[in-house]
Image 1 (cartoon, rainbow, N blue to C red):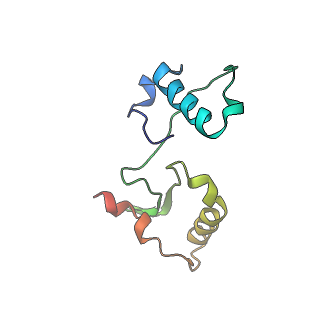
Image 2: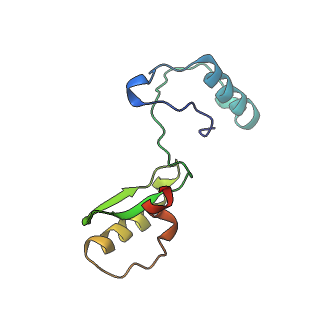
Image 3: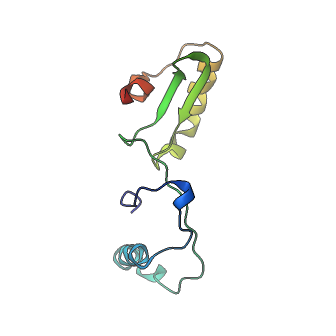
Amino acid sequence: MHHDGEFIQEENLIREYNKKDLDIIRNFLEEYIPSANGKLLNSKVCIYTDTPDLDFIIDYFPEDENIIVCSPCSGHGFKFTPAIGEICSNMINNEKIKFDLSEFSLTRFV
């Protein structure tokens, strides 16, 4: 449901839902949770952040290893908060990292 939005900049964000988005949600509810497909009481529009390859960024800033870049976006980052917190703690304290972070490198976008 959350991968089909339009690409926008924050300053161009329209903070009201549109009929197309509401129809997508209504169809989903009708199929999977029909009893929840009632009157709309409230709505909010937010920015959904993502990287070009839909994965996290966890890396040192190339020009200064005292700076850590951590962007667990892509809509699934919240599930990995404990692991990402541990990784960032290891990075800050110059401790061994238990995970291979190569797929989360900033250099993949160069």
